[in-house]
Amino acid sequence: MRLTRKRLCSFLVFVYCLFSVYAAYSVFFKSQLVARVHRVVSKKESLANGLFLWQHILDGVLEPADEDAQWREGSLKSRRTLFRYRKFPRVEPDWSMLRTSRPFLCNFLGTIYKNSSRETLMEVLKKEGLDKLCWIAVRQEWQPNESKDSLRSYQDALLESDLTLSPVGINTECYRIYEACSYGSVPVVEDVMTPGPCGNSTAFHSAPLQLLKSMGAPFIFIKNWADLPAILEKEKTMSLDEKVQRRKKLLEWYRHFKEQLRLKFTRSLEDAFLPQTKEG
Image (cartoon, rainbow, N blue to C red; front, side):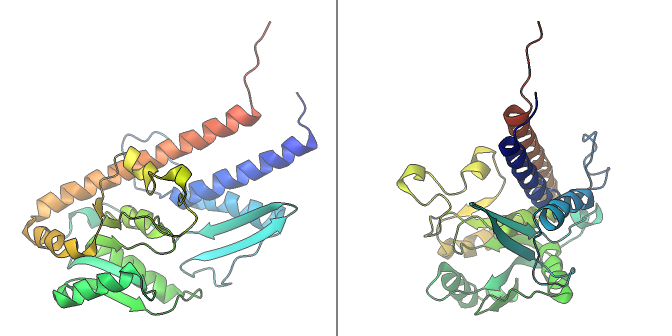
C-alpha cells in the first residue's frame, strides 16, 4: 500500500521523535554490565541518525556551536509543527565506577531561581553543614553556553557522589534524573507539582513523575527538603558493599527502563505506519 504525502511527512516526524528521544535515554554500557542484552545499539549511531534528521531533513541548527558543550539544543517551526532537539552529554560508564568509594554524599550543580525550593535546599544544606559533604556548585542565572570544562565537572560530580539532588525547576522532571542514573548516582527527586506545562492540569492530577513511579524507579522521592538531613545521615551508615549493590540495582533498572521505552516507541510506530495485513 502506497503512503500518501501526508502520511509520509507524519512518518518522518515520528521517526525523528523516535531517534531523538531514544538517543536521549540511550547509554552505551559495556557487555559485562548488561550480559542479558543480546543486541546493543550504539549511542553514537542513535545520535547520528537523530542529527541527520535534524540537520539535513529539517535544516535545524544547534546552539552553542561548540560540539563539546554540555547541552546543545535547537528549535524550529515547519508549517504548523514545532520541532525541538536536545543532545545529552555522552556517558560511557564502566565497572570501575560501581565498586569504588565515592567521596561525596550528594551533589547539586545548577541554577538557584529566586523564591524557589532550590533556595530552600541550599538553606538546609548550609544550616546543617551538609554542603561541606556534598559537591555543590550553583549560580544565580541560567547560562546556555556550557563548555567542555563544565561538562567534565558535571560528569565528575555525578561519578563521585552517592546521591544526586534533583530539585524542581519549571517542571518536576529533569534531564539530571537520567544522567544521574547513567553513573549509578541515586536521584533524590523533589516530588511536587510545579507551574510548568508538564502534567500541571486537572486532567493530570496524579502527576508528576507517573511513568517513573509506575515502572518502580529505585529513587528517593522527597516532598520537603527539610527531610534531607535524615536521608544523608542514613547514607553515612551505609557500607560500601550496600552502596555497590544499590548502584547495580539502579543501573539494571535504568537498562530495563530504556529497553521498555524503546519497545513502546517501536510498537507505536509500527502500529501507526506498518499495520499487519491479513492474507487471503
